[in-house]
Length: 585
Image 1 (cartoon, rainbow, N blue to C red):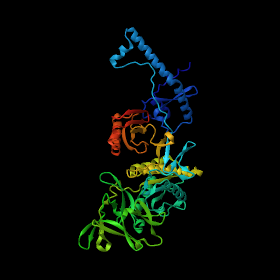
Image 2 (image 1 turned 180 degrees about the vertical axis):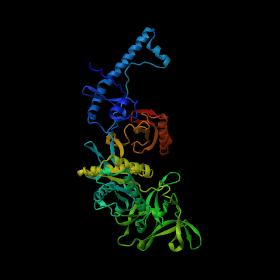
Image 3 (image 1 turned 90 degrees about the vertical axis):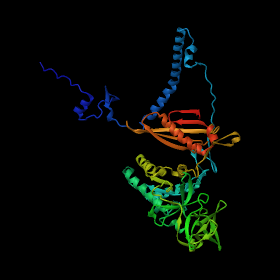
Image 4 (image 1 turned 120 degrees about the horizontal axis):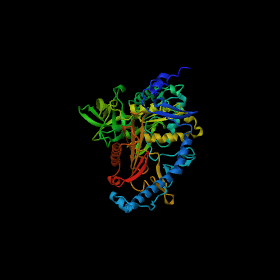
């Protein structure tokens, strides 16, 4: 007779993969994953063989529709049936004990009410977006921000003091794109305070191209590494600071003007300042001229009388043989017009000479005014005037803003490149950034203005500060008589504190959860204060984290609104998993 078959070999999952496939499992005690049936066999795999996919499956939409249909058909019915079943069992328990349902519930402070509840609901009116010169309309599901290609002005546009550009496409496409974007931003009302013409003849200004632009061109977007992107952004950032902050090209010095930016005062408030560059840009420090109501002194001068005098630098302008004395904040160069301007009673007026025709140094000079009104010229001063407000900008770059924003033109919608850009600009440099994709721009065909308008809205929001409180539109609705009423319907009826909270978790067991929150008392929900916290990875927000976010943002809101308004505010809390309304105590 044939020999008996060998006894079967019993394997664990670990020993099977090690002996048959040479794979040593790192987590042999983790559960297996069933991926379904292939023929007559159910297939199981160790969990470490799987990776997380962030995209949607091909049938994701069909699955979602099926899940929603099932919920519509069964969720409500099952809930009613479950409640009826519980009430029946509760009634049986009460009757067997010879007591009523109310008797059983009373010790727990509960009552039973089976009548239907009626709640008053409002049908909110359609929101209306009002701009400075008209209302936006909806076309094919999109807000149209232009009428006959004329841009709708922002009611509260931001100020653009400086910027840097990084481009991942060739120079011609870069110039064409940014000329269109910057032109559109100006049409919406975003004020160009760089004193430089941003675009000329459909191209990026030749003054700006060599000083703020850094090209990072590769045949394939995937060939760009995070290190390459960081190097390009850092280089463009430094070039922009050299031009706008240190005046390395002499552009501002040659025109007898100063670049403008924002300055953080010691109490945390922002103020607009003029920048006095150092004699050597490598010093890493600048001086600032503040407005007269904040700090009237700008320089300490040594007079020929042997006295140190506190003065304010002024602009002396020779107009038709008469010297006018102008504060530096009321003097600027309008690059688009090719002439200097002075501000008179809030209006900017062109001076009767053009920089191209008459050397500006023949018409303009800087003088120093004492507190008593006496004016000192360079002939009255020994040595160089010493600025009062000197800032070590390389030690604390947050004190003086430059650049205001970094524009990045990507070749396509590559997610990895976008993530690298945001990591560098947000976390390493600390400057807002606005990304765009050349491939998306090419697909616009005849809708380039709308595309640029969409970008301008984002730029306007990112340039917003306590100085300008920029907003692209005012949100409201049409009340009685088709009269525009300010604010979002219902939210605007009483002072309402709107709180939005969302979470994002990393991949892996040891990952953290980021909790981000926004709080605002603005009736249009356009002006908000923001904060972020971290916690151990969890689907729910820890109560301490949520309280901290709301406390910090609430206190910020109190600084912007009256205490009476805040104390009467209702609270609308919007989270990514639920929505509730309660009274703020």
